Length: 392
Image (tube, rainbow, N blue to C red; front, side, top):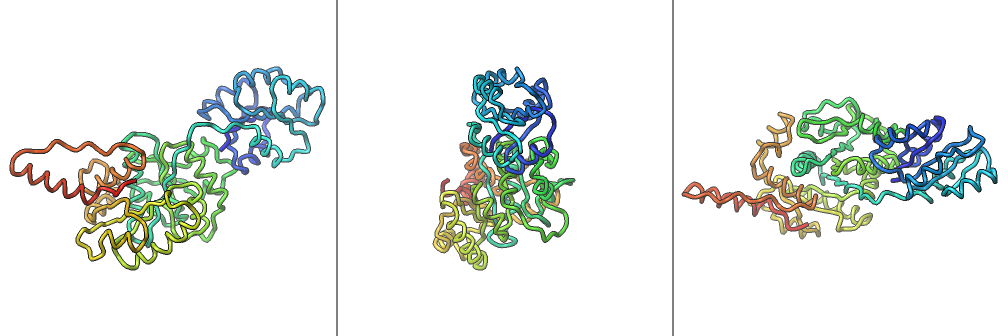
């Protein structure tokens, strides 16, 4: 996504119009405000618009912009295409001139054409989908986000894309004032500063963009959702999305922007639902972006891992052992179970987080001696066998 700096007299129509076209837009009324705005952006702009419609000549500071931002596309917004101004602009390195009557589509196209998108890679977005209600997908999403933050302390965001009645805020003990609906309704204002005002920090360090707090029949605009996910990926190192499986527009947006983990359990109805969900996902995105996880894994269940893999035509990448009491207690406290917890379930989430982030597996503790130490080591090996993934 392009980051664009607009310099000149305030024009809410230009700012809103570019943001609505999914261009991250920042404004500086004067040239001496550029440093303050750059501090807000936190990066060099990919494009600069200089609005000279209220001026008769080209400001001398424009030449300094080319030196300061050698890789940015420079676009002049003028009242008319005056040949003298055009020639001067070309000499100092301006790439495009757009004249009135103002056409925002044309201005946006010019910025896309001459802008140099940042080479800084956006964070991968991980969408977590439950194959059926009640399989524990929110538990997976919340604990993955908490584990990702815990292993590196990098900014981590959890987005609850259930427009109403999502539970991520409960799991994280948060009381958010704003929701994902506020973000989607104000996509034309969605710069980093506004976005940061919508999210809430939680006790485990994870940032949360929560679901709405009341029922709604409204739909989701796919373009607005993509813009939201793209912005999130530029402001946070890790982005996890707790995603509803029944909204086709939401699915279309996350398919375009995300890696996807489908959460199943060892039950026939869930596997039937997972088969339909996976068939649809494979038709719209590459299989290497889809992962399969078993929640509440029971090694003694009648449906084994091999049965799940054969039925769904995909390897099981992650297994989370069943520990209902521990998971329920964590929800009651509003603290993810990976926080200060040494259980096999917490360890499985850490393995998942490290594989997703490209980090090595956690170091194994030194073996204990004596009868109880040997018993504990044997139990630990058994737990590792249960929780380790088949590979990423």
